[in-house]
Every structure is written in structure tokens, then in C-alpha cells.
Length: 225
Image (cartoon, rainbow, N blue to C red; front, side, top):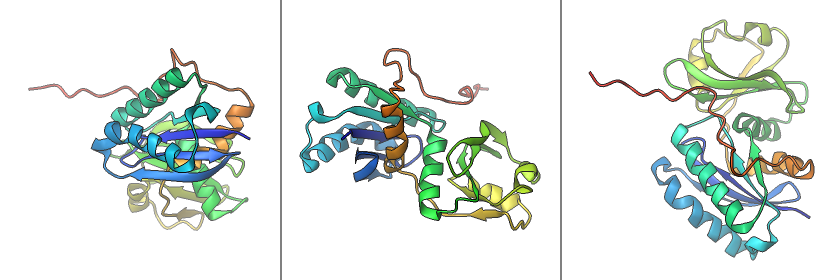
């Protein structure tokens, strides 16, 4: 029996979830992005207290590793690292895009389709990937500048579900295509549960000293005139 605490702050919605054997048993969600640094530690304490679990009983801490908000990812990773160091627990780094695909797949339950999470990266750009029903990447994670024909080669092959806060701008420019289906999907740390469980049993632990978020592209610093 594995107890894994998961933390996600990759987007404007932050959350903490406790899972047992790959299934989330409680999740707390904060929708105020500017409060992530203050609320995540509080949520950790609350969820352990309400579930009657001590830090010593946890087997690992998982974190949404990116891509996503630069500041949000740093908050989540710093929190997870601090807990792992203080509690002497292994760190599990879960792809943000893959955990989004996990959640959408659980909701849609279409084994013949592909799943395409899209995170808004400003302007016409998104962080995205395409996963099959086994959550293996068909198109590797990347920062993609959207054009109406950007994913034609993939859409020609099978139905693809699109979701995430970057998908509305893709929907706005995409011609009507039968294989393109848009679904409303809210990501939380609960969707990390099966992926974190798999990493734990594979002993695929992140290096606590050197791990950093998967940003996908460098941070842009606007120049003052």
C-alpha cells in the first residue's frame, strides 16, 4: 500500500491530493494563482490531518513537473523538494501534460482516440503533446505556435480530444473537422495519482538536489524602453 502526496501548481489552479495505491482519496484546490505559495503548505497539513495520515506514513511526494507557469512550477517544485528533504521521502516528477491527458482519458474513456492537452503559452503559442490511450507520447511535448494546419497530419489519423486552457484559441482557428473534439477538463493533482504510483514502483525518483521544472522554453524578460 503506497501513500503518495501530490502537488500541482503548473497553472492558475493549484491543488494538493493524497492518493493510496494510485487512487486519489482527497484533493484540495486553490483557484487563486497568486496564493499558491501561501496555500500549498497549508493544504498539505490539512489533507494529512483530515485523512489521519502522518508524514512518516507517506511513501513519496509527487509534483507536477511542467511545462506550465514559470512562477507556479517553481512554487510547486520548491514545496515538494522541501517536504521530501524534511521528511526524507523520494520525489516523483510527473509531466504536467501527461497528467492532463490522464484526467481527460479517465473522463472520456475512449480507448481508440488520442489526447492532446494544451497549456496557454501566450499569443498563439501553447505547450502541447499528443498521447495515445496508454498515455504514451505520439507527438512529443513541445512549445507550438498554432496555425490552422498545425496538427493536420495527426487529425488525419484518428479522433483527438483537445483540452486545457490553451485549447480555446486552437478551437477558434481550426476549421470544422470531425476528428477534432474539444472537452472541458479541469486539471488537479488528483490526476497524478496513477502516474505517480507507476513511477514509485519503478523507483523512478527525481534527484532531490538537481531536479528543476520542465519549462520547455526559456523565460522571456521584456526590455525596458
